[in-house]
Length: 214
Image (cartoon, rainbow, N blue to C red; front, side, top):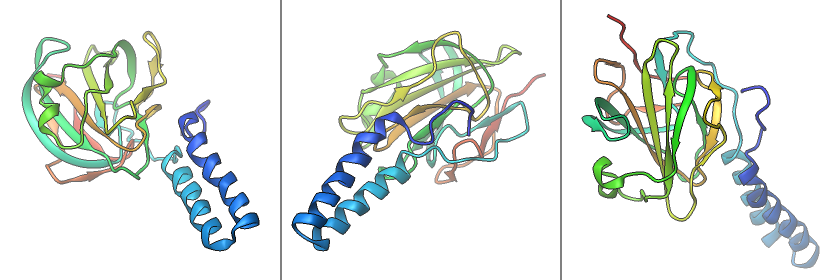
C-alpha cells in the first residue's frame, strides 16, 4: 500500500457509514432481521473500497495490472491519445470487487483526459461500459509511454487521485472505480504480453507484459 494513501477510498465512506447507521437504528427499532443485513452491506462496501496491500513486481520494465479483474481482450490498435500503434489489454473489473486502481508502471503523469473517445476504442461494444471515465498518460524515465483509460459502469465515474506532473510508482494506488469498470491498458506495439484472454489478474501483483528496449 502506498504511503499517504487512505486504507479506505474516500468515495466509499458514504456507502459504508449510511448502512452502518441504519443497521444500528434497525437493531433498536425493528430487530436483527433488518439490522444484520444492513450491517452486512456496510461490511461488503468496506471490503470493496479498501486499498489492500500487494506485493509489487520488482522488474522495472514490467507493466503490472492496474486493477483486479479479468482480461477480456488483447488487440493491436491505433492509440488515439498518442497517435501511435499500440497493444491494448482490456480488463473488466467486478461490480463488488476491490475498486482501487494502481499505476501499471513507474514514471511521470504527463496528461489526463477527462473526456474519452469511446467510438475509436470500441467501448460501446463492451457490455456494461459507459463513456463516463478518464484516461491517463504515464511515461517512464526511458521514455516508454503507457496510457490507461477507465470507463465506469452505470452512473459512477472512475476517480483519479494523481495530478499532471506527479511521479507515480509502479503499483502505486492512484484512483478508484466504484462498482466496477472497463479498463484499457495501451502499451508500445513492441511490448511482450504475458497474459491471455480470460486470465484473472490482481492489481499491482500480476504482470500484464514487459516493455522492450532494443
